[in-house]
Amino acid sequence: MSEQSKVERLAPASAPKDETPADVISSDTLLKGNHEVLIQHGETIYRLRVTQNGKLILCK
Image 1 (cartoon, helix red, strand yellow):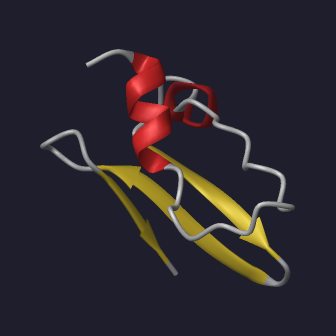
Image 2 (cartoon, rainbow, N blue to C red):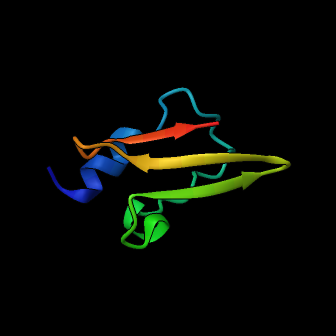
């Protein structure tokens, strides 16, 4: 499956037509070679990590 096909598959079917589509950012860009990164959203810190199976988990 091509990268473009993956991106198209992620687009929600019920998104309003006047809404701008979300940017797609590679997990490699976020993680920069690490297995986890901390993300601050407001006053809350979240942990985005890669599992042993290569999946992503976001925890509060």
